Length: 201
Image (cartoon, rainbow, N blue to C red; front, side, top):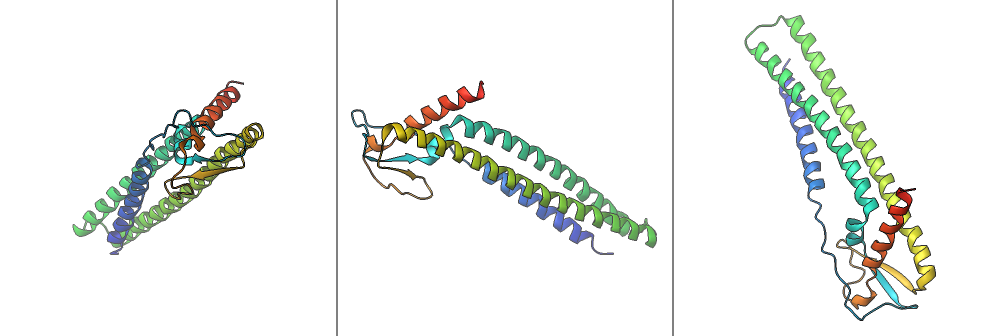
């Protein structure tokens, strides 16, 4: 009947993991947009590049989808934390009653089984919700990258660049280059115009 501290420890772990994920999500910072140098313009046959971090942070479709996703994520975490706090409170109350000898053995065993069952259900709910949100985020990213790829296929059919590279803070494909070959801002403008047209249809 001394499983109550284990229940409390599991609840604390669940809350701390949720808090960590929220901290990671909240830590996303908007990268600085790099302006092209006036007078330097990419022409057909050039190898150009896109700063994907900056593109995503300035792409309306990505921001709209991510905002909706983060709202859903926050609501899910709030609900799980509410249930977790209630379970923690009930477990402490149960432990207090045990220490004061206020429960019969059979009543204590029944309450303990109930607490363990609630803990298991909460853990399963948290796992299922995490998998659901991971799948939703995966689909969201695929939608965004498919829209970018589709746009770039049409964009390059018009501009005829030899190659379009991507660079990001995680993997610098382009360490240094002519800023006139950075087409990020132009692509963002085109993507946002296309997104607004499609959204208003």
